[in-house]
Length: 329
Image (cartoon, rainbow, N blue to C red; front, side):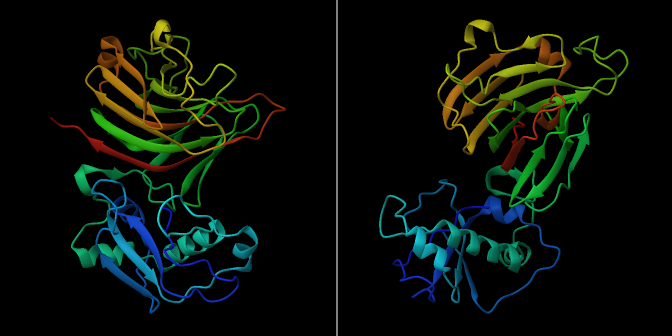
């Protein structure tokens, strides 16, 4: 869920907020919030507009949700209110979480999108959310015994001792596309996102002959914590293809773009045999591989929880704000 912005002066603590509290949700977030039942709230006022000072396309287009009756917990006073960097806006993390939970509780997406004449699941510019924020609908697990759950607006994968690699895979397959997501991974865990991938069948082309049938195989965008030399996140690995890294060795240079213990933004553009990747806005990989494109012109998206040995873990990796748009031209 998007981070709400609270444009009110810092209160003394523990009292009612002296003014309206504004939570800004992007169109993508609204599309991703699928309510079981739309509800209304007398304390909620909505307006389909762009927040002042936010440029078009900055990721904050959508709705302004104003809560007229919201309390600030005493915990905010203890932690103090922290300026976000510009203007007179203030933030308090516990309060932000409280507002976000209120947004989820009133389950506004269905009702507000209907009011705006938009359909749930559709997003501006062809973007579609792959995760509804509350369930694993549209996903299916393949391989391994790691567990996946929807929690706090993210998909969280948890390792299982002795399990091989596990994958939570999109039911739908994609060919040419642009994919964006955010990920946070334990420093001791390796992970990745499969693209254009599939499960091995008898006589499958491009699969490791040693891999068993049913094994997930295909291009994987690497997710790995940074070591002393940096991180290899964003480079492309050939999961169960028998080829190892698809990114050429001379291009496989550790970088400093990945931030350990934090949410990291990834962008992937797959168009024909070319796969480009970015980590936190910085270009990382630019791979053209005709062979992998011939064997994998399209396939599912897969969220990997890497296998671990017995006696280790458990470790977790989480993904959020997963969205995709197909490139048909």
